[in-house]
Length: 240
Image (cartoon, rainbow, N blue to C red; front, side, top):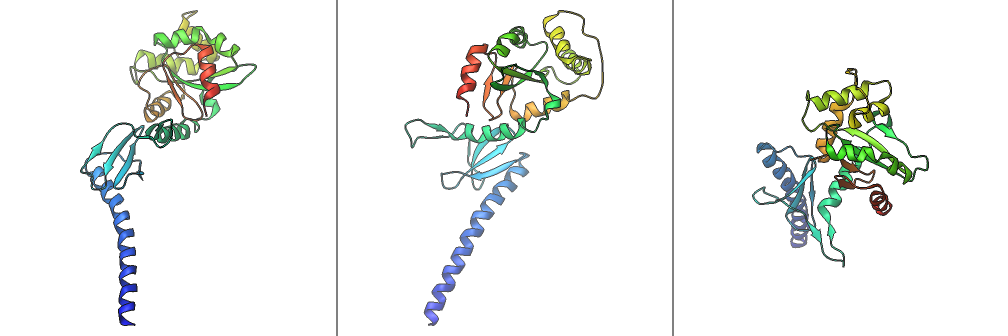
C-alpha cells in the first residue's frame, strides 16, 4: 500500500510540476521580453512545442520559451492543399477588433445608395493615390461600396497634411471639405475643433498602416494601396 501511495503521490507531483513549468515558461518569456523593452500584447502557444507567438501591436514574433531564440516571419500550416498563413490569421483578428471599435460618427462617410459593402480607408490628403481614389468616388459608390475615411497624415502631427485633416473635420460639410482638399475644387478654410485625427493616426499605427491609402475591412483584411472600384468590389465579395 505504501508503494502504491508513493506512486500516486509521484504522479500528482509530476502533473502539478508540468502545469507549473508550462505556466512559468510563458511568464518567464514575458519577463525576459519586458526587460528587453518589448511591449508585449499577447503570448500564445503555437502548434510547435516550445514555440510561442508574441504579438506586439501589429507585429508577430516567434520565441522559444526561454526567450533565447527568435523567428521573425510568417508561419504557414501546410496540412491541407492550400497553405494557411497562421500569422496573417492572427493579425486579421486583431485588426478587426481595432477597426470595429471606431464609432460611425468618427468616420467621414460617402454612402452608396445600393450598399453592398463597406470599406474603411486610411487616407492622407496630400497623397497622390489617395487623390486618385477620391476622384473615382462615384465609381465606388456605383459598385455599392460605401467609403469610410479615417485620417492618416503620413508627415505626422503638426504637419500641413495634419492641419488640413483637422480643417476638413472641423468644416460644416466634411464630405465637401475633403473633396475640396483632395481635388483642389475650392478653398479649404483653416479651422480647429475637437477632432479624432490624432486618434485615427494612433489606430493606424496599431493596425500597421505603412502607407496610404490603406483599406481595412470589418473582418480585418487589408488591401494596401489604390484599387479600382470593380477590382475592389470583387475582392470584397470574396472577403470572409
